[in-house]
Image 1: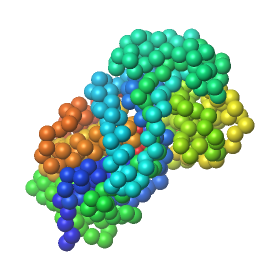
Image 2 (image 1 turned 30 degrees about the vertical axis):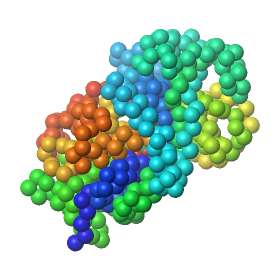
Image 3 (image 1 turned 180 degrees about the vertical axis):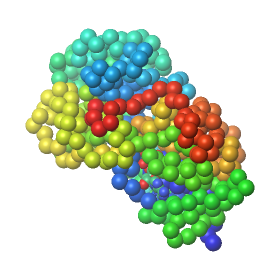
Image 4 (image 1 turned 60 degrees about the vertical axis):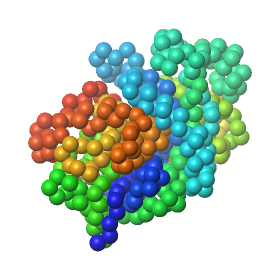
Length: 422
Ligand SMILES: Cc1cc2nc3c(=O)[nH]c(=O)nc-3n(C[C@H](O)[C@H](O)[C@H](O)COP(=O)(O)OP(=O)(O)OC[C@H]3O[C@@H](n4cnc5c(N)ncnc54)[C@H](O)[C@@H]3O)c2cc1C
């Protein structure tokens, strides 16, 4: 029987980051991945928006507006959900790792992850947008130094292609972007260069637990003896958790997204609006995202979803009306009830670790997730407190059979009506 100290299940950006940081610490790692349709990393826009996402911009504000339009605003909500300070701090720390990571991955993995210092601009179209954005600016959780209010004239100078039908924009400095596919590839290549073993196109079919300890991981072809398994299986993480008798409240949240034909440089910032977000990647495509839908594992795109995004994009950048769409696609974000990732060990099974539930910020939060998991696995002091992200915050650690009668009580839900694109 083959053996490995650590088996990481799932080769998206999170599993690859964990494999990279663990291998960097000299741990013996095997990364197993069966690429499934809709895996999130292959669908992502690659935004690194710690401030924007924490205060409810990006998908948050698109989703909120869609809910308002349907008259289904969550009780007591007066704007998109804002995430707790622990999340913002985590995201800021993770984001700050990117410059060094870029160099490391270029050296070790031989790939450029195309980190771009862009900033994120929230476009203010009307009174309602302004009423939402003004307090965010005044009480920005990171202080005024990272946010800036642009007048329409300042916005026109900064981004000449943006519509003039705006009241201005709120800029977040430090909210940047990478190429998400390159990032996962680079982590994987670097992990391999540091000695990690990769098993691509391989499904994990079982995790064996004896006397409360992980002892092996099984695939159709083999059993791999191991003391530690890291569950980084994205939207499929509950299937792996069930193998060790744990109920994990992670569920797929579909995001539809559009890529334009390759264009000359027209945007220097990423844009967030109540209709969509837009990011021009280094190779010239403008990425227009994204819906937030709970439709199970359906990875189809819908006419209404794509039309809504396209209309929002043309509203922000009128010249897009003349531009071809090259491709549309959808991916499955691993969502959690409180929108925070699920990280770290559980009480009931020694050797089992979560690294999942990254919802709409897995690209951004991959470096700190990878580092923290590697620190946990090597017994090193942690670079960030893990407590706010433990599974125990969501549900008591009880076996699946018992949980089925007592579903975990979410703090907040990002649920949308089934089948309805935002
Ligand atoms: C449209 C869209 C836009 C997004 N934009 C952004 C953004 O701008 N910025 C940002 O930070 N985040 C963004 N996200 C979120 C981000 O993409 C995810 O949070 C992140 O990719 C999650 O990574 P993961 O590795 O956990 O999951 P995945 O990428 O889904 O990887 C999980 C892997 O595990 C594999 N797997 C599952 N079961 C098994 C098994 N039994 N055996 C072996 N392998 C298995 C899957 O096939 C998959 O390859 C976006 C997501 C979507 C859908």
